[in-house]
Length: 271
Image (cartoon, rainbow, N blue to C red):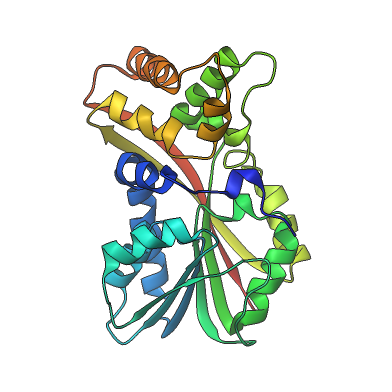
């Protein structure tokens, strides 16, 4: 199965993702995810779609030194940043892996953690079934997904800006991470993947943004949408950055300012 364009974080994208988006939109949810994982006291944990290691670092800090963490991602460029960040931690193994076909034995892990990754899986029920295969009986898969764009103004503004600059054929990246907010759909996909014991919580955050332009750079340069922009001869990426920063300031006030975020966290148990 080919990798969807929305899941291809290559080139310089990981750096912008990590430095410009990581502290603002990913770090608070990584801390929440790590707290939930820690409460279950796993001795072996698998992380899928680990990206640049933001959630991996939170997991390492929350779990005891004896716990083994295998952190994986589809994109080597993302893992390169994670590797530089995490160093040679004895209890963390970083590996490239495709969530659709995990090269691990059945029932190898107590827990699976996924930080904002399931939205990019090309066949979610199949990915859930594969995760369930490598999960021990009684284990849990804990993951978060973004809420709707209307509850996450940064995404709503970035997507609207893409439409404004490309009215005939706008980049569609933001439809992927923010297109899986229907709890009923997620639960149905989990059931199709073999998970029948599922709970979920909505997590809302008021996050302080120190600099709108710095953050807006991540919203353009820190995801695969930048490839569509750079392929155009009529649109400059920096113009889109300025438009997003201006709209964020208009809607939420001069930075530093608080920005609302919303996500849903799922706990799916293998019974």
